[in-house]
Structure formats: structure tokens, C-alpha cells
Image (cartoon, rainbow, N blue to C red; front, side, top):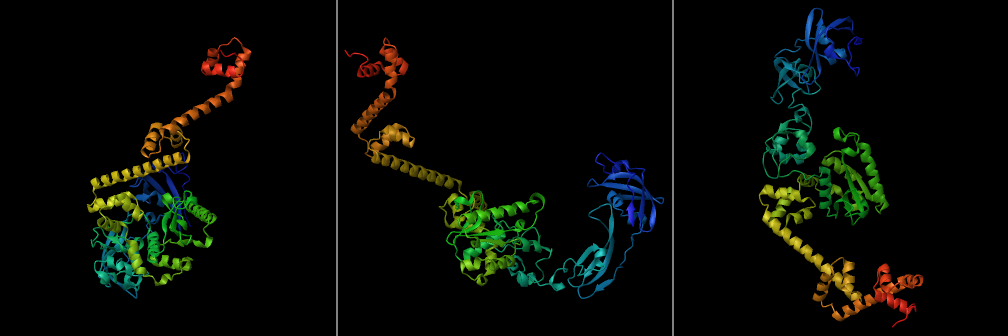
Length: 533
């Protein structure tokens, strides 16, 4: 039984142990068959803010004891029940089916988790690969595999090499196939890889397992453009089969898509392909913690939305891409309804070439297209590749071929063409209105198209559709219609004014109704309320 009694220690407002106020307090403990009390002499803060104690026990002072060790009853150092002597000796050899190395050095190393504590470390010489490695003595006694960091996961331990499992990685090794044969895809050995496109050796070394997972060494010539490797791989599969598709189909392409976008929409087959990454199957960490439920709800809503608008359920294909590995994605594609839908045998594709194309981002293609088409603007190139203009500009600036003056000229021409097309459509609409309704005056047409009357007059005159006599007739007709509207709507009010007050003059009635006195006199005369002279 192991137990420490911390009930007597002072507490803060949150009921946590106040170690900084615990100097002089005694802590009773039970540690296996030992019982006793240890005294806290002093409490300080460690490098990361943790409490570090000085403990007195049996007239000995033990420095730099983590408070967590006392709290969790880890008292081997205080009670000296832990051995500080090396178990191995220099010159000792270990050899069996999986390892063959010799201890050539010993030292007290500093713990990474607690710089004030040390551990026993030994240096081994591996006879399999010739490497010398420092490590904790506990790892040597005894490991399941070779303790040498270099050959522990190498082909020397019986694992298949990269040449057998991931031949697509071979071009990244400066030594080619001979060097790739020395490693496996899961090793953490860091190497300076070569870019298979531009041939540059990466200055910073990266782990082999990182290259296997990301399919890229981060060279400036082949950085990805925001799309994941599974997305690029499926794109290359569809390209190799020459299947028309729309990437990131949104409501611009599918009016019913609302705020969602679909990875691939195949218009000729009326099908949708969704590549679901790790976040659709496993809970994330950090910023993406507790996002799994939200992602799954969105997936269900997207599928239901597509099925409600004409996409058959068996043509809504969801591919499990939780691993960014060609073999994993390939197997899931083969198990999906996609081969039957495309009526193609995906096993006959050159998956090695598809993988190579998938690592390669669109930056090199954008650069080549820009060089072959110097008359194309950044906007047109971005539209051709379906990417943002900032990416195209970044590629051209990096390559030193970006011409700001040319872009301004092309922009001016584009605006001029836009305004010319808009003006042509506007003029055609005005002319069509005049042909369809000859009785319309320039003012009527101006009100319908939202323009000034003089602008409509100028356009009709240029097109030969303006006739002065017709315009005057339309004007008089409009005035007559206005007079008729006045008579029909206000004649009773004007007549009632005269009946109620026979002495009222036409001018007074005009001021009250807003009409001229001649109009008032005519209305009264027509209704025999006054005699005409």
C-alpha cells in the first residue's frame, strides 16, 4: 500500500494545496512496508511554474523534489529505494535474432521533462549498421527490437523496404533506389531529400515517415494549393479516365446547394463524389476538438439536400480518405460504386503515375501555361485552372515573369469590352421597346429602362427610330389622357365646391384644388353651373 496524508497542508481559495505556504509542515506516508514522516523545508517554482520542494527525511535533505511526486506518492528517490548504479558495464554485448550491439559508454544524462533530475544513459555501438547512439539504460534491458535508433525500424530488422512498399518515394532519395532500399516508410530517420521536379536538395532534413504521410518535402516548386492529397488523387483518377467534372461545386453550379460545396460533381452522370478525411471519422484536437458531431451532421444534411434535388442515393459516393495513402484510398475507391458508375476497371490504371501527378501541385502547370500563353491575363489563367488570382500572381512573381503594365492594359481592355457589351444590350432593349410600342414617348421609355430622357432621345435618333411628328402626337395624346384623368377623378369635387358656395370664384376654387381657373370655368360650364359668355 502507498499513501500520503496531505490533509494538514494549507489550502488556497480554490481548495488547492498552497505549496508556497507549506514550509515546516510534516507529511505522514505509507510506502509499501515503510512508514514515516517527511518535512517540507522550502517550496520554489520550477522552470514551467510547477512547485519544487526541499524535503528533509531521516536527517537528510533532498533537493528539487517535484510536488507532484509527493502528491502521487512517488517516493523512491526520497526513501532511496531506487538504484542509482548502472546495471550494465562497458563492453557488455547484446546479441540475438533482432539485435547485435555493444555498450561503449556510460553517463548521467539530464531528463528532458525535469532538467534538475538525471537518468542513467549508455552509448551503444550497433554492429548491424555501425551507428553509435546514446539512450536511457532502461531501453537496453531488454527491448523487443534493436535499440539502435537507426536500424530499429529499418530493413535490417526484417521489415520490407521502401522499394517494396512505397516505390513512389524513390525519386525523393538523392541516392536513388540503392538508398531507398536501406529504409522503411515508417522510420523517423531524417534525411535531406531531393525534389523530383526541380532537382533541388532540401536544406532542412525531414523524417522519412513525414514524407510518407504528406507526400511532399515542401519544395517551393511543388507546394500544394490548398487541396488535400486525397482530393488531388481522385482528381487525377477522373482526369485519367477523361470524366468531365466540376471541382468544389457550389450554388454557382448547383443552385440548390445553399452554403455547401461538393468535392466533385459529374454532370453527365448526375453524380457527386465526396472525399472524407480523418475529421469525418475521428474527434479532432485543439481548435478542432468536439467538431466530429458537427461534421457528421453537415455530411448528412449535404447528402439529404442532394438527394432531394435529383441526385440518386447510389450516385452520392462518399470515399473514406482518413489516411493520405494511395493504397488506402485506392482500395476504398475499388469498394465504392464508382467503378460500376464509370464502367471502368480502376485496377488497370497506372497508380504510380497517378500518385506522382497527385503530389505535383498546379504551380508548375500554371507556370508552364503562363510561359506558353504570354497574352493571357492573370484572371484568365486563374479561371482556366480553377484557382485564385493570388496564386497565379505568386507563381509569376516567383518566376520573374509577372508584368504589372501588361496586366493593367489587359484590365483596361476587359473593362472596355464589358462596358461595350453592356451598352449594346441597353441600346437593343431601348430599340426593342420602341419597335414593340410605337406609342411610347421618350419619357415613357426612359422611365422603364431607368435612364434620362435626353439619353434615350440620342440613342433613338442614332438608330433612326425617332420621329418628331410621332413624338408630338404621343405628347398630345398623353396630355389628353391626363386631362381625362383629371375630369374623371375630380369633377365631382370641383362641382361640389360651386354648389356649396355659389359665390366662389374660379381662381379660389383653382387654389383649393390645384388646377387652373380656365379648367375650373370649363368644368362648371360643362355642368351648367355657370353661363358662358
